[in-house]
Image 1 (cartoon, helix red, strand yellow):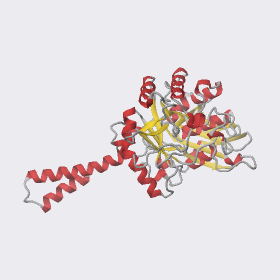
Image 2: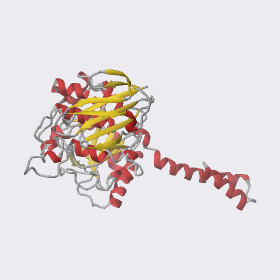
Image 3: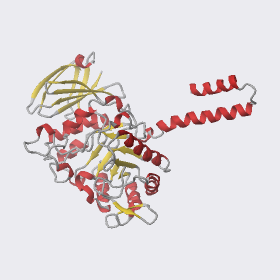
Image 4: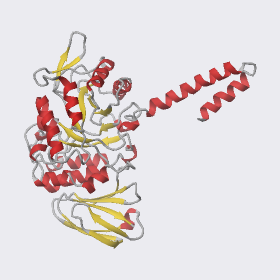
Length: 427
C-alpha cells in the first residue's frame, strides 16, 4: 500500500496543475498496476491451503490407467472411508492422452477413456472427489504421450472445461537449465489462472533446479524435491549389484529436512507418492531396487510425510488394502498433523548417531515430535525436551498406540529399526 501513497504524493508534487479527474485517473492506473503485481504473486496460493491428499495412479497402474480403473478407485475410496478422512483427489498420471484433434485440442485415448474426461470428472465429483490430470512441459511426456509445450493456454482451457481440479506437470524432454524450467512452468501456471477454473498446480521437475526457491513465484502450489520414489527404505540399503538411481523413503526425508523454510499454506515441498501397502509390486515403484518395505517402514513413511507437511498420495490397491495398510493410511491423529492449518513443516532438531528428531509447531499451540531410528536394529532413546528447545512439562500422546503420559520433560522409548515414534505434546 505504501507504493500507492508514493504514486499519489508524486502526482501532487510534480503535477500540481493537473485537475482532480486526471490525478484520480492516474492514481487508479498506478493502483491497478500495483495490485496486479501483488495478485500475480499470490493469486494461486489459496488453492492448496493444506497439503493435497488423494490417490495417484502411477505406481499401481503405470500408463495403463483406464476410465473404469478411475471409477473403481473412486468407489473404493468412498466405501473404505478415505474420502471422509480427507483423501479427496484422484490424480490421473501419464498415459491417458490420445493425441490432438483437427483443432489441436488435446483428447483422451478413446479406448481407455471412451466416455471422455468430462463425464469421468462428473462421476468423480459426484462422489465428493476432485480430479487431477497429468501433462509435461515438452512435446511428449515421460512415457511418450502428447504433452503441452506451446499449447498451454489451449490445454488449460480444455482441462477447465472438463472439470479438472489439479495438474501434475512433468519435465521429461525439456532443457536442463533453471531459466527455461521457470519460464515453462510460469507459462502453464498463468494459463491455469486464466482458464476460468481453480486448478492446483504441481511442479514435477525432480528437484534438480531447486524448485523450492522459485516454485511459488512462478505459480506452483507444490513441487517435487527429488526423483521418483521407489518402494524401498533407502538407496543405502540396496543389495550389491542393484541398479542405482532410485531413491527410497529415507532418502526423500533427508532431502526434505533441509527445505523447511520453503513450506507454507499454498506452497508445499513434495517428496513424492506414498509407497505404503505396495509390498514390492512390480511396476514403476518396483524399479531400481524397489523390493518393498515392511509395515514399520511404511508407517515411518506416513509419519515422516505428515510431520514434513507433505502431500499424501496413496498408490496401493485401495480396494484390497490389508489391515496394516488401512491402519496406517487412516490414522486420524497422524492425518491431523499433516493437515494442520498452520502449515509448518517439522524442523529436524537432531541428526546424530542414526537418530533423527523432528519438531513441528501446531496451530493450537501444541507440538508434534518424531523420533526416527535409522539404524537396522532396535535401540533405546532418551530425550530431554530441553534438547529441542521445549521447557516445562507436557502431556504426551503416542499417535500410533494411543498411549498417554502426563508431566513429561524427558522422553524414553524403545524404537524399532526404521521406526518413527510420533508424539503430540500439550502443556
